[in-house]
Amino acid sequence: MRRLIVATVAALLLLGPVAPASAKSYRFSRIDVDIMVRPDGTMRFHEQCTFDFDGSFSFAWIDIARGGAPEDPAQDPRSLGYTVRNASVSEDGTVFTQVAPSSETRSNTFWFAEGAEGWRIQWHYRALDEQRTFDVSYDVAGHIVAYDDVAELFWRFVGDDRGAPTDDFVARVHLPDGAAPGQVRAWGRGPLEGEVEVVSPREIMWRAPRLGHDENVVGRVAFPASLVPGAVEGSGARLPSILRDEQRLADEANAARARAVAEHRRAARGDRIVRGVPVALRCLRQGARRRGSWQVSARSAA
Image 1 (cartoon, rainbow, N blue to C red):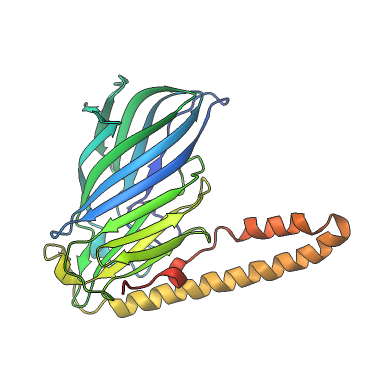
Image 2 (tube, rainbow, N blue to C red):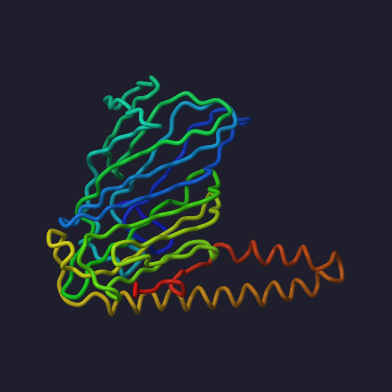
């Protein structure tokens, strides 16, 4: 089982076009992750990735890692036996042709394969100094667990090894009908500028205005187990342990944030003497970026 960092979830998404020449570069203008939860517990993913290419590029991929985060004691092993299937790739209405995993490099083709560490979706195109948007879809079955009190979705929406920054990130989870106001709760982890919102009993949204190349976004949702009668069966009450776990993470993040603020205030006092305040304040913002539990923003829909 592949180990994931930052005490998270089920899968690691790695997105990256190949740039053999050092002069080439790329960034993500936007990544949208849309997840439709079905009553059988399957999650249908639709990811829209907008690349800004500087140079010539010919293929990209998404890796979905097998297993979860064993360093997270709250992760239920029953949620880690998921499978990935039904992959597809398109661009602006053009559906890419699936081919066998090989050295195939024709544009508008893709392949999907399972390996020892997980699953890869790789697609081919021709891009030169331009912006391109690709749509990648797939199903994940066997991750959501339904307990006696709630069902839980606990997923890393985007991984920390994309190789390039992201200007705007949005993830949405759509639940089946049937939840009443106040029955859906959500949390997020990622950069401090991020936020999570329960838009309605059917929709939860996470957003980060920018992500560094090594920053990720994790989402967690607790919702009525009756919405997913076909999900993996759990036992006992789950919500109390979720609340304890998320409170612990929030406390740790707040403590780290307070230490960072105190440290950079001390640096700012010294910096005034040598160079002035603005440099120290800029360091404060940069130094605090990677510590973020979004529990403060999480709420139930009312």
